[in-house]
Length: 319
Image (cartoon, rainbow, N blue to C red; front, side):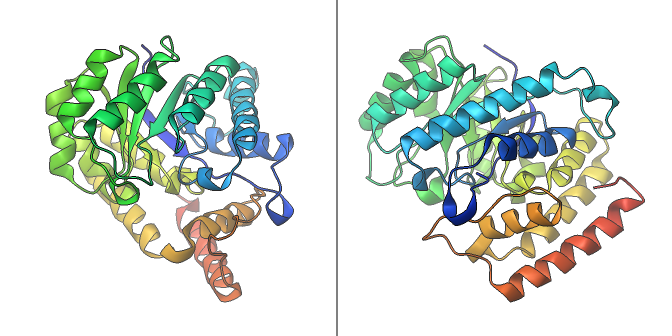
């Protein structure tokens, strides 16, 4: 049910002034920025997209804009002529997870109705849930859209439950459209176990960029990357080098990615990403409170760093 591989940008939500909902033009511009730089697909409204701070109707509208922008990209006859344009599928996996099962079902059905290629659903993050509660939540959501590919989204640092390989296997057996997992944890042994238990046909994406290359080496089909929301080239270069069997280049790409991550203020990560987009000519607005804004000093330092990075890479491949 679908073929999902490559680098998927875990998109920011480019909010307007004062946290207002984004315009259609802003979202289309942002989607084109990402797709022109070689990502295979888009993953809107996840953790990087500030989903807990958005109302349900806002999420639906943004999903519509992203799916529409991806379709316009696919249908654009001039796409292949633009420098850097990639021939990838430009698929959209809409994050439809929510705290409640009812809202998750509504968001899944909406994503199907607007033509999303798949949905991703996070483990509900607030209450501690046992396996039976998780089973009910995911099976109910998946069966509400039986013809739509469905990805479980597990980020251990933000939830109070565990998506074990055995539980995931049972979910996939109960609902045929549960076809993949976005694992945003730090345990490569756990990722290895997912691949062993679920088998080669199950789509596994690594979601922790510090472990992008180790994840690929353990059988990941691709990367869903928050850093790709602002610097997609770093992840695209890593993925392409790995797939081409260029281990030394892939290792160097992971090192560059690690250096980039180390230079981002973790307390204001999403603000940093939005500032980077602004530096690169893509308006992304500000984060919604209570997320931390980037300080003026931090903003100036980041701008200088991005300029140095662009200068360093210009000879090899323009950013």
